[in-house]
Length: 384
Image 1 (cartoon, rainbow, N blue to C red):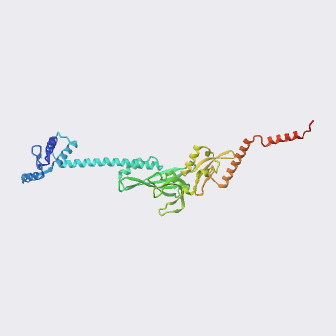
Image 2 (cartoon, rainbow, N blue to C red):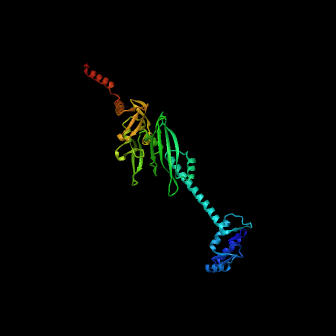
Image 3 (cartoon, rainbow, N blue to C red):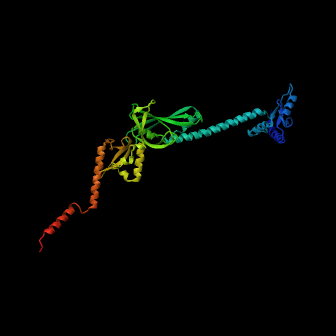
């Protein structure tokens, strides 16, 4: 149907009135400009079809459409924002189709942008809680907009655990798009730990879990340093359990990853009890004790204050669940063997025991001895 743009509102009003009165079809000449005066309305399709057959000839072609379709097309013109004050002929159906496609395209883009923003926030949270900070916003957005099947982001950091050494940690973050939802997910990260320049680094891939049990970047570094990390995990049935994790550098799988040993909660390792075998000052304060325990559970080599013979010294400790103990290092990070630790604990215990005896018996030792001598001398003196 060809209409004059300036007649759109009048035609819509007229068609709505005819629809209200029960007319369900409209018939018109497809080769001429149609207005409210040369369009015919019918109550049933047979009458509309018969009218078109009678009116069609070699010069003119008539067509009928459901009145709902005509109303929808006229409304699409008005909603498009077109200037209906202009006298301009246009093909109504074609214009309406293009307008609907444009609107659908904009809505799809809006929905896609909304989904992309949600996806971006989701990935940012995943990276944040896995220990990679909040520095990848621009790279994430750029890769999401590209729409590739998967993408990678490289990250390099210096890890020193508060110690003089500076280990280089190069991480490859792996993202993949879901085939069902087109959302991207942070699936894994591959770590290369280089302790010395110009030498091959130690490599391991860590996989991201849906819950909070994923291994963080700092925990990954501690594991690759040979230390143990305590995590709450879930089995295949979804039941939670606690265990210690430690890399087994003597065994690797087909992908080149080292086997991850687990020391289950039933294994019997008690970190606090193992620490209590040493004279550690922080254990005397609930707050400092909790901080120490939490740090060791994350796999850190943690500094602690050892008190031996009344003298305080800074040492380092790390959890050792495999042998149900803790490893102790001096200020120069030299390992202190278990026998030395026991002797230090024994010496401190003996000193504390002597100190308690002195407090409980202030008149003991030399003072008591002098008093007894005096009493003996008095008994031996002759009476007058």
